[in-house]
Amino acid sequence: MNTISILGCGWLGKPLAISFINEGYAVKGSTTSEEKLELLEMNGIEPYIVDISDFEEYDSFLNSDILIIAITSKDVDGFESLIAQIQESSIQKVIFISSTSVYGKLNKVMTEEDAVLKLPLTEIENLFRENTFFETTIIRFAGLFGDERQPANWFKNGKKIPQPKGFVNMIHKDDCIEIIQEIIAQNCWNETFNACSNHHPTRREFYTLAKLNNDFEVPKFEENEVYEWKIISSKKIQEVLDYTFIHDDLLRI
Image (cartoon, rainbow, N blue to C red; front, side, top):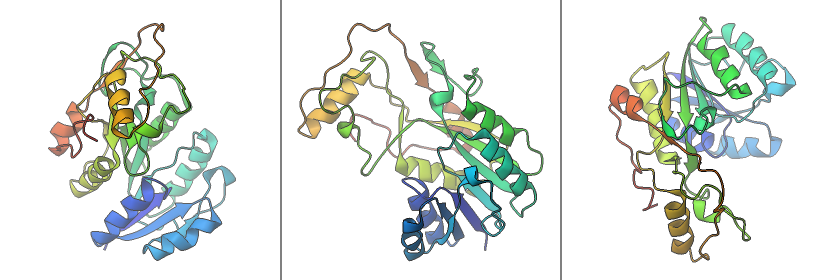
């Protein structure tokens, strides 16, 4: 039985861990909070405290076959220290969860071939991509939603929503989990993927409908901004994994 370690068992990592346990994997999961250890254990996850910025040794947590990194840290030094430990561990495969925020708003469709911004996140991506001690696949998820993370709850208290003519790039948690499972099941390594619903309504359409469907007032928008947008293409991941999105109509969420 393969063992998977998930660095960051939060909003995405915990249900991801449970999904792998249901598939028969042994799963180790990390948190930075002592209070959450019991919750992880109750769900069948072997719990660990891991904070990469502490520069401690995590030999037992990294004693696995596959490591999935699902934390939002942009601590380049912390990741360099972690990678050094991965090199000395039994980990052979890594999935690094990144973000489509690496792309600028260039008023065009963005693919994996497009240039990225110079950010700590892209520097961390490159640390994993260039390492030859293990194989890494990088997933750049678009805006995340699902369960308690609902767009209707964003931009509250009269806060104006920017770029109403721009386009929405989002992905549901169910699709995130399914895509990660497929990468492992299909042994798809040394790749970089965008992952985003194919549906890109305008921000005005999307947030207006989300608010009204949840009995909120019609939202207010910033109307006089310079028009900036991007549309994230998921063509590559759909072709390589033969993947069909579960939630692909963002006006019916």
